[in-house]
Amino acid sequence: MPTAIVGLSGAVIGSFVMMLYASTHFANVAGPDHTPPAVSAAPLTGVSDQDRIVSAVKRTKASVVAITETINGQQVIPVDPFVQQFFGQQGPGIIQHYRGEASGSGFVYDDRGDIVTNAHVVNPPSGARLTNLTVIFPNGDHVPAHVVSVNVGADLAVIRVDGYHKLPPPLSLGDSDKLEQGQWAIAIGEPYELAQTVTLGVISAFNREEKVQAEGGGNGYYDFKGLLQTSAPINPGNSGGPLIDIDGRVIGVNQLTDEGGQGIGFAIPSNVVRTVVPALLKNPGVHQGTGTGFAGFAPVNLSQGIRNQIGYSGSNGVAVYIVEPGSPADKAGLEPGDVILQADGKSFDSADALRNYIASKKPGDVLHLDVWSQGVKKFVAITLEERPAEQQAIQQPGGQGQGP
Image (tube, rainbow, N blue to C red):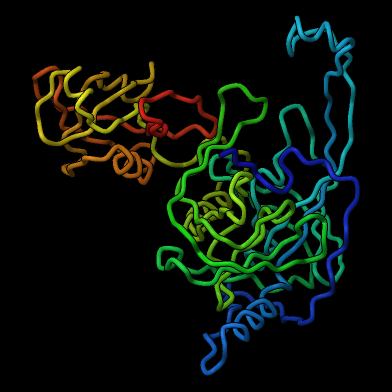
């Protein structure tokens, strides 16, 4: 099923709608070292879930903002559509400049004016320039902002408003590792240009992987792993807004909607935010990698057909289907047809499990593999690099996923 990033990506919007005034106001408080204070109060007891949901929204929505911007770029307009069919995208055309407006959502992260949102909300397409970046607070204030840092691969970004004395309190981050399937999930943002809107659902699944077509088409795509799946509607404009729990803690950042699956949305887990955002604040700029380990080979489950093809009669392991030329795996001597018996002393019989294990490691880590190779056991040490944000699709048997 095709998956689409919602919010700014690909959307040029002609006008904006102001947020509603927040029904509650908060003091400008902050935790030590600019860390988010506990805006969410202690769980309410003796009340219904509906009361707790309403209370959580009231306590947090003042810190959820709209983000608006102007995009200046250029596009090639074909002189003759019929001629374009023969020349393709490189055919004759007229370069036409365009100027459009777009919007997304975000939330206050700390007391310095840092606001977390999606990278695709504030990272314009290639050849375009972003201007007039503005944060609209629920009290109606329009405050100029600037981009601090962007991680394209993680689809997270930090923007900042300077010297805003009415800054609402930062939202507190929950522990996404402790989430349970079926618990309430509340999405807050700016869907369809409407004033601040709340949608409700549950956490329906974990560790989802979604591939999204990269800018410009072709075989390039972004491979987002470890996403939360929720039934809370995440509509255009919701991108970058918080997904909160029933106690008002941020458990995810709204990111994707599945066009082919009604009522299915995806969010970046809060524990990813907890790791990526501090790194972005320490290293300003645009980062194209994902910050996760990359080996450069495609594993595949051992079917009987693969066993027969490579002559392997062992009872366990994961086969190597493709090794990307020039990748860390290629440099370390891993070859197609090898069987990985263990990785760092751990046994794997599932290609997905091995992929997830490698993705949990960082660039620079060394992956130690025990390998069966054409009847001989060998040891391979792969020094992981940073996984590129945009990747090329690898066709594998049985529709299995991209390699680590």
